[in-house]
Length: 242
Figure 1: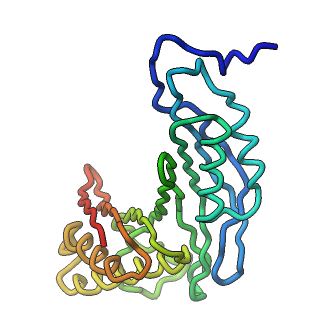
Figure 2: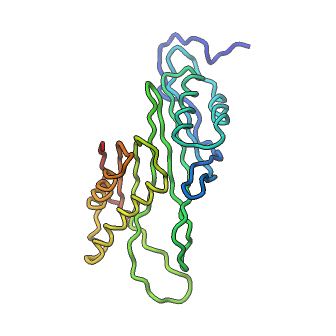
């Protein structure tokens, strides 16, 4: 049987990205407290298709993913991208993996002691591998607690912070989350005396950026802080090399 996908294409038209997306896949990520954590990821895998090929074998993406079914981290992520690039004879490979990461917090009588965060590994491999870690963290306003009967009130969600980092060395996901949360927690407390309206996306963005620049292992970061309004949202973004 002819391998149609690997036949030469004389039109000399490069396709920037071709692959598979939204694969639901069980993965195991590193957990500082429990060593490993099982979760479900949404995976996107794609490559740059050179003009000399008519197409690529889509089934090979899943085959490669199955070879690395176990622990997912910086090392294995590099290996998956390298394998994609080699196996599909591609100029560059790309891999995105988004998952919920669960983090145990101090137990409180009126709240769950387990929080979840949306995290992503985002990688590409052309000449050299590049891997970024993204975390999304809610920004919660400090509300005055009142003694009321019935179910406990939910805390007020002011907005969210999306932080993407490029690491020079290993860092635990929970250490990164807690470091950012400490920066977020400081700013609302400083603004609380003047009312929640004094908390701005600009001041919070600068506060998070200041703390990230002091975190060992971070070589580059990009962040976006968004305040969620009823009719519209405000936001601020910042990118910096440490």
